[in-house]
Image 1 (cartoon, one colour):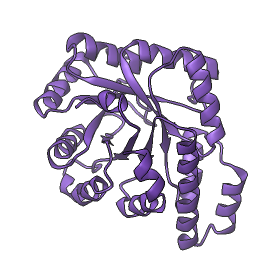
Image 2: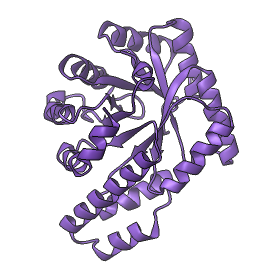
Image 3: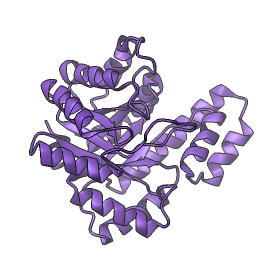
Image 4: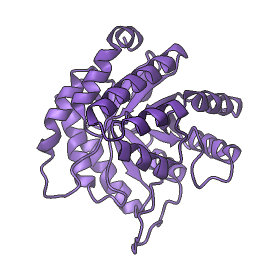
Amino acid sequence: MKISDILTRKKTLSFEIFPPKREDEKFTLIEKTISAMDALNPDFISVTYGALGNTLSNTVAIASHIKNNTNAEPLAHFTCLASTKNKVDSICNELNAAGIENILTLRGDIPKDNNQPIFTDFKHASDLAEYIHASRPGTFMTAGACYPEKHPEAFSMREDIDNLKKKQDAGMSFFTSQLFFDNEAFYQFLLAARNAGVTAPIIPGIMPVTNYNQLDRMIQITGCNVPLKLRNYFDKYKDDKTALEEIGLIFTSYQILDLIAHDVDGIHIYSMNKSGFITKLIDNIKYVATEYFK
């Protein structure tokens, strides 16, 4: 089933997982993670791969496993980086043969110290989505990413939202957002996107943070704003792992509840493959979540 069809009838709950980083690692290492997340009744599970597609075969295998062994739809990531039309054709054939209908099209982050050709046939995610739809009409649904606090390379928020509209015009059916900790930033972004003519569902992406280094790393990578109260909590308990996990659980629970209160299109959780913590998180908001995502 195409995820866009699910979004026409309900709010969605979804998770992101990543495959093993090395080709020689068996993807069975995360089968328990997938099974635990399936027990939480997600509508879809997205599967990432390395910046230059270095775990792409695992991505297809894991997406196929999700399709055949869970009640969730798989959403396979696909980036422009180092992707030729021939490569896209080959992967699309694999996905189609496995019954996978949903692709998250991304430009991809350029790796540091990279010495490979970066962009070949596709420079932007919209180019990739456009090609997939033109070459295989009706076969796949494509989705894209959006940035509530602006893509780091965008000149302005206006430019970034104009690019979001281009993605919609290229055929993308919905968007998942970059992680954020400040819900007000998301609400302002959502309003600006709607005023610019972006009508596709926009699902907020949430990453639970449970250790001090992870918080700093997310700030460096995304440039996202961290509310002062969250920073104060983490500064006070930076060396207390148990306290930080509890703080992360409470803060993320509140963040999701506030988003639900604002009637967002769904919730997408960047799980970091931590199925135990995600289970605690969903259980912490069980009553509201059960009603909202039914």
